[in-house]
Image (tube, rainbow, N blue to C red; front, top):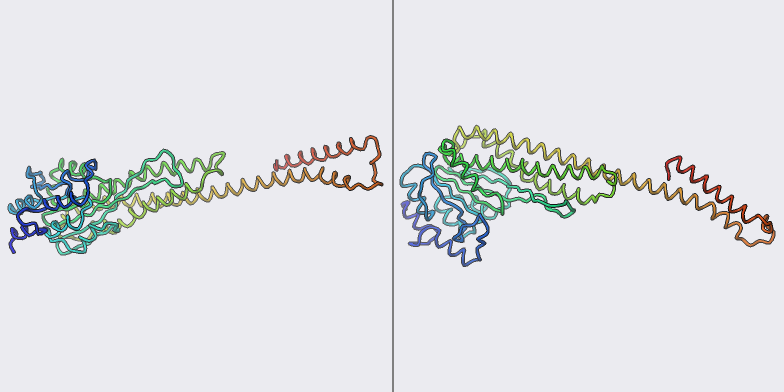
Amino acid sequence: MTMAGNLRKVTGLGKVGGLRKVARLGRRRRRVDLSHPARSPLGSSVVNCVTYRDGIRTPEGGDPVEVVTRMRRRGAGFVWLGLHEPTDQEFAGVAELFDLHPLAVEDAIEAHQRPKVERYGDTLFAVFKTVCYVEHEELTATSEVVSTGEIMVFVGEDFAITVRHGRHGSLGPLREELESDPGQLAKGPSAVLHAIADHVVDDFLHVIESVQADVDHVETEVFAEHGARVDPGRIYQLKRELLELRRAVVPLGRPLEELATRPFRVVDQEIQAYFRDVSDHLLRATEQIAAFDELLNSILQAHLARVTVAQNEDMRKITAWAAIVAVPTMVCGVYGMNFDHMPELRWRYGYGLVIGVIAVACLALHRGFRRNGWL
């Protein structure tokens, strides 16, 4: 079947063309959140569709299928198609138009994938986990510190398709930054892949800087005067959020290493060298996360040690006061036995003498306990 026939066949939409009917299906499926900057005003998952020639953005626009048709008819340049959380129906036409592998398509739609790089024929499929720091006035035992999303990238000879999941990590500013450097963008779709990888890793470092502020705050509170009263749930929550960050950062190491060392047909050799720099930045992020985890373990152990010391001090105080109270209890218990023949019962100064003895004994015990640091 010819290329034109394939384009007419996309999603079975016939003369309507491309993804226009998909957009209408999306509108019937649910109400579109126009306040969301990632969604198309048309209500479909297509955020943007732009073609580039020699690193320069062409003024063409319109239906994605028509854009791709004109670009391939010229036989030069590439198209960058951006989507946000597409459904099976919305992505079916794109998958057929660019001949994407079903397994990669399934991963792109379902999301919740581990960072990876896979090759399907002449198409490269990469998965990146995105992270965002969640601002909060005070860290609690239920605070969300790190929010994650995903970016899937399909790279071919004449296309780069980005599929984004989550309400953060917009690629609009990245696209503008790339367009300001035509020399880099002229290297083809692999330049888009490198820019996204670099953008994701830079976000890792920014989030790590924000998380460090939370770690420093918890550390300061634990070692403060009343550190034993700190809620340990806050430390555990920070460790859980750090684990979420680790799941996004650490698995990306191997895919970046493959992109930097393994030859791929669709990755320009000059771009491949840039991936080594991104890999170095990722290594720094990984080391910082490991350091935070060890520090939080030390903070938690220090907190538990301070709680134990505080409990021991409380027990010593209780024991000291119990010893002091035992003196009058013992004396009063002896003289409360009501025997007729007991010394000093009929003596005029017996009561005063007993009270004096009790007071002197209690004061002596109190002084001794204070001297030894028990009170």
